[in-house]
Image (tube, rainbow, N blue to C red; front, side, top):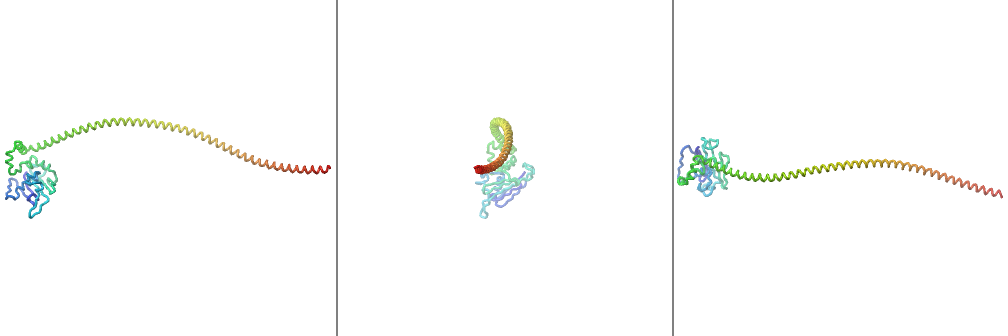
Length: 309
């Protein structure tokens, strides 16, 4: 694997798009002071994820954006892309060519890309573990860094050897795994507490369920009793209704017979009344006849008395 190309847009002194190509082997960049040689190294360090403004020789991260000059206004964004030849498969990606891109805006927002696909800084750091390339690696050694390595503590030199030997990646993964295990153990403890609480609630719910079941059983028995009572009352009422119907029918029959008798009596009364009228008329006629006879007799007696004198 080797660095094939660096593309800079708006990074520090590189206002315009600048592409620097490299060939396998040793490449030397020469130029007068202030021509931007160190800015190229800063760009490579930056695109690999450098987060220290001091390492980039700036006050804040936004200072890597071209700040303008007497001929050019300031830009709003800086972008750096490096292209790596990966034919030997050093990077764990199925690509012969790998591009890493980083962007930063005046607002402070930043973006990372691997082969033009958005990613996280963590993805880039993990990609270069044990390759000897990275922000904390010794692939980029600035001025005074060699003396610092020589005078460093044995632990720091050990870390350097572990990185070169390819151990650092596994130590990093081991640290992550330990953290995950610790987190899992904490989650397990919390889960045990949750399980204990659930079991307590479950016991309470079982007791409540038993009480509810007894209540339902009593409700069913009560309903059965109510149904039996209702059925008994219904049958009793039905019997009473039949008895009342029978009595009503008998009374109806008696009423009908009585009505017939009353009608017959009324008819007979009417006939008797008519006969009475006839009798009274006949009596009146007889009285008139008797009165006439009595008058006639009186006349005859008077005549008889006259003749007897």
